[in-house]
Length: 152
Image 1 (cartoon, rainbow, N blue to C red):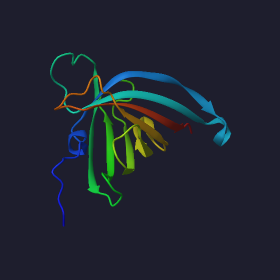
Image 2: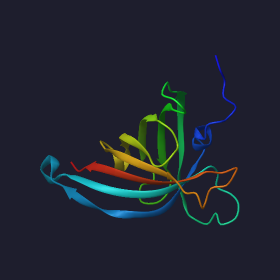
Image 3: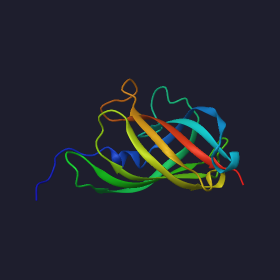
């Protein structure tokens, strides 16, 4: 069994802090008789919340687990919870589950549910490495969450 000398950035992602950037207003969706609302939330996920220019408001944490995937060259399966601890969505969570098939370009992940304000939510997220903000010891992902919320 061959081993790789490169390390995956996922373990660092599991300890990330979500930093709020902006939140777009939702729009009503015709599905379910107009009771669903599409909301876009943008957060920046950092390897750690420290150092110069760490001035944005921390709105949550990321926790999860991952397993190596079988698709080459670098893939894995993961289950990640975004736990909002401050701001408009404090006390709520969103769950991302599925494969990551590499880190070149945008990474799209499904959102499969949540708690609190995100109860019965579904949608997807697009994560893009923010090259200008990343360093040799830190990776910053601009993360756009497209969440379809069900209004009872």
